[in-house]
Image (cartoon, rainbow over all chains, first blue to last red; front, top):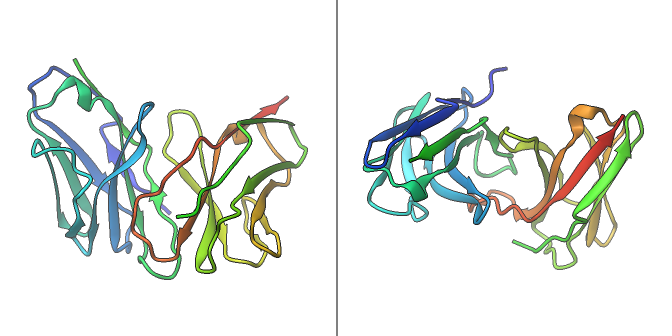
Length: 115
Length: 111
């Protein structure tokens, strides 16, 4: 079975540019999560969706960050304008249902470097 | 979510069983024990989870003590590809709160 697919794997761009990260969750999974991982703060939940609807975006750091899920098989995380402190590894994860103790399955992440 | 304590690092010889301990003495009755691992440059990978019974899947076994205050993840025949940081997490079933990874245990499988 295909896992969670993220693209690009690496992104290097200059400060001020728009960055779009993409995620394809596992087919049939109702929940999609966006995380950010840094050495300083570890793994942080940014936002999660249920059936394409954003449920909790309290982890989104600023208005510069936005996330969409136009359909069940695709989500984007956008940063505009990007800043050096946004440099991190961004992970997308999906799970089958929230109840029933289903685990979250992660993609391999996008390593973002803002110069 | 209950706090967990794991040793910072462990070594294991290739082909031998790797036993990774986790203390979660403040676990409550509706909290599950989850294990994830993160291999360098990859996303966290789900391994196994359980409530109070021992569990086994194709990757590992999970042994939970009767009082549920500690658990052990067992990789029966460790390979070099099992070298990773292993995280023990305790959380309520159905919780969508973020997965909080502690420091974990760096397992190094030696040839």
